[in-house]
Image (spheres, helix red, strand yellow):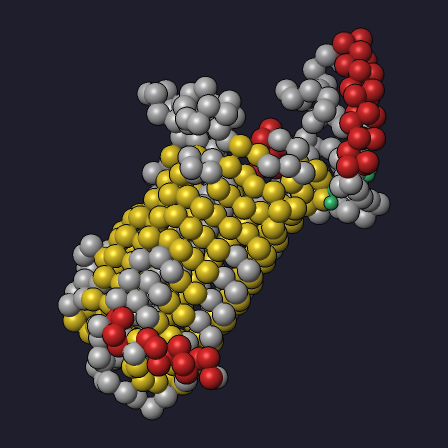
Length: 415
Ligand SMILES: [Ca+2]
Ligand SMILES: [Ca+2]
Ligand SMILES: [Ca+2]
Ligand SMILES: [Ca+2]
């Protein structure tokens, strides 16, 4: 929206507000939303006629949960194009530290006290439950704005994030950051989204402290099937138990990841990856990297610990991706790039150079390949940095080899 348009709208908006205020007093005192005529009862919900309803403040954001398909807000769609609206767009930065005092407490609007002095914080938008599924199913365009200090403290609840679950959706150009950003849930926990399927995420990021027992990631808890995630990243910490990733905890089938990275400290037990925890079948991971350290406290299962990916199951492609994560595994299957490798995966032009330690099946690039049919080509690990001379129990296999970091760099410089 241009500044001229903002000015015109603000002028018009104020005039309309006065008219509405007067008419509401005269005719219908309860017809306006709690936020007054600037938000509910707008004369035009889509000022720039792009099909995306403008989200101007936290109250508008909160109202999305009642309009999950993006066709209306406050149950109204006045001013949407003739074929309707199909999503929302953020017009400004928002801050959950609503009184701006640098502390998250009962004086902030979305504290949601549980009655015992503990704030449960923001209730995620969209959910899956036994009572019926209601995911967010529309576009959310961030317009490169930032939502600061998201706070959620719901340790017994699944599907936790700014959005709990989304499906058939697009989320674009949105950042989450701020030193109070803290998201806690039980399962399927991520800063931005708890669980996503059949959706596209483009240039989104999350920077915060994320806690969840399982399927928990810095950006997304679990990505089910058929998602495309592009140009996105996460920073901060992810802590929990099983299936944790700096970016995403669990990845299902047929997803595409391109140009994403994470710089997240990951601490848990089983299935830990600097970027992705567990990756199931037939996914593509291209031009991705991980910088954050990965630490397993106690591996109870056969899931691996890896700098980029904890466990890569079957039929996946990893292309031109790398890890500089320090990887500290426990018990079994610890790899500088991938902890446990399943079957029929292709790993091409990828490398790792982080210190890699563990007990059994520790490797500079791959901890252990448990299945057959994997093709690893033009890929390397730095023996001096990893302090591992082997990968998958060998010092050199058909298409990959351990080299000093200087030589790994040379290989990639010289192509
Ligand atoms: Ca717009
Ligand atoms: Ca619009
Ligand atoms: Ca309009
Ligand atoms: Ca505050």
